[in-house]
Length: 130
Image 1 (cartoon, helix red, strand yellow):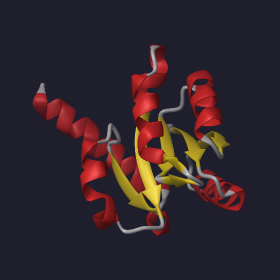
Image 2 (image 1 turned 30 degrees about the vertical axis):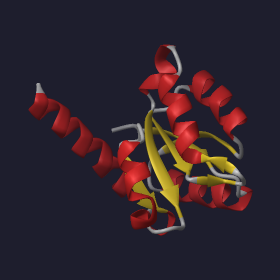
Image 3 (image 1 turned 90 degrees about the vertical axis):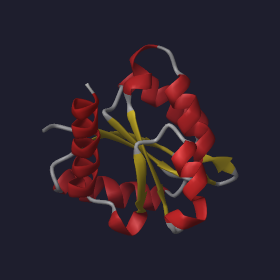
Image 4 (image 1 turned 180 degrees about the horizontal axis):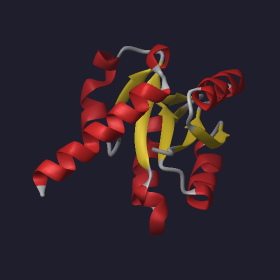
């Protein structure tokens, strides 16, 4: 399964490292951004399958960005969102649950396998519901 990924993180070094890792593991990283404004523009333009969104974007909220992406018209809203952070998911459990994201991954757990598994689980749940 070919998966096109977009990375939103204010740390340029992290974006470059995770791009290299995911590319090496077979995903196509189509872009990245360090701010909400840039992310919204590029996600609308590039229409990735998945956007990895850091919860804390140097004073901006990744949760708010996820809401804005999911509210975008056209096909940009079809991008599946995965929240990422160095923080533990338990710290943000309620916000993660109420967000439009399909889930959360700790930055230390980011891998093509984990992303693919989240997408497969989502597709399986959708198939069961229909």
